[in-house]
Image 1 (spheres, helix red, strand yellow):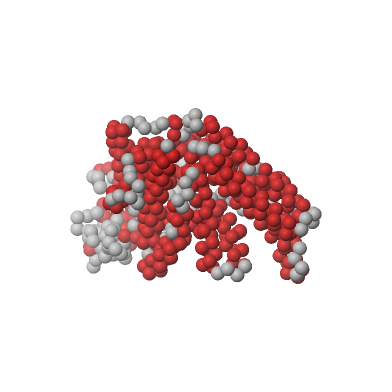
Image 2 (cartoon, one colour):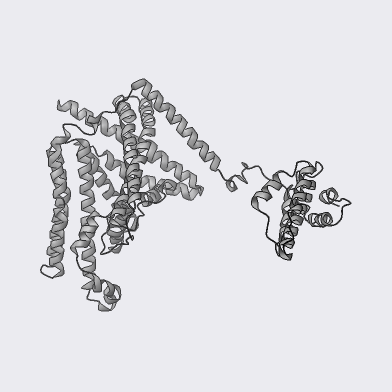
Length: 533
């Protein structure tokens, strides 16, 4: 006979005898399993005739079961005295409830005896190798957040005590910024290029000009759209922030122009295809509704996407309160980003030497010291632009497809990161560069190399042109991603472990790569200013 049956083997009859027979069936249950099995059985037996016990009463009875027998008997007497004979149904319900409570009290009296077994099953420790991934680590994650807040809070207090408040408004807006009005006029005039492309497409659809002429005109328009702001920035001695803003706007404008032109060219090719048997099956739907619409072009130029199409998924209405909350977040995180730049990054780079000149250990120490605040700024930038600003713009325009990024922080390889982190650019490259290369017989590896080359060119334009210096650090940094893609893919296939590739991604991309580029460009800009004097 098992220990549990010996424990409950009492001379009592009736209800307690039934409990003894039920609990002896499951002898390998946990310490409290008998309680829940018997209570559930009693609940099942009594549910046909009466209502179940209140949650408050049930909890009160469970947690006070270890008290003296006086409390239990008092509870039973109180319940029995409350039974008022109104009719047969109410009497039966209250009797069943009292019997259920009596049964549970009897179980609780014998469930946690000193002689009951405390160890019944083979179990692993929660942090053992066989069970660690089956456990929830939410508490440890919360601990990491608390430690992170505490450590960074101490560093902020220490920095303020040592250097004071270093925020200077002239870094963002100064009298020199007011002289950048030519760049503002250039930014506004860039809107004429989509209008010119629309006129060309309208003439092409009406067959007023031939396809070679259309292609030539579009090449001229798109080339001028990117070279014009470059010339304006180099011509005028502008603030770096103003130049970066103009170049970003010019690059977005260029990508949208190319998408608009390429999409119209592809549709015309489908519509005018000589192979009607194949073309009609592919382009019948397009031919019915497609026409170059100026309203669709205007919406596309304002929408948070780089891929042109006649219509987009739209939401039903604008959530004004939601937009206001996101704007408040945008202001807060933009201020936080400026605080980190002024209070931490600027002093570090000003007190550093050129990373490629001098002591190598000193350069490594500067890069590692700069990596943490640089990473915070980069994360704030990502959150402000890709999440807050693009979602605000999408909400105001009722733009439905808001997959502006995916879970790039879980990327196992560098290649996976570039597919997840900037979805508007990724969709543009896949649609207008990668697959057109494959359709024209270019191998897959060469197509990937072309995509990285184009990305490197635009990164160099957005950084080197506003800084008025061409050392190709950004270009080299992006092209260096190609061997890193091969390396992380090899390690991922060899170890079959997602943590290895993810750690390598964070180390190379965020801890070493970006701080090194910041130091290189800063010192080159400073050296250029010294030499110009």
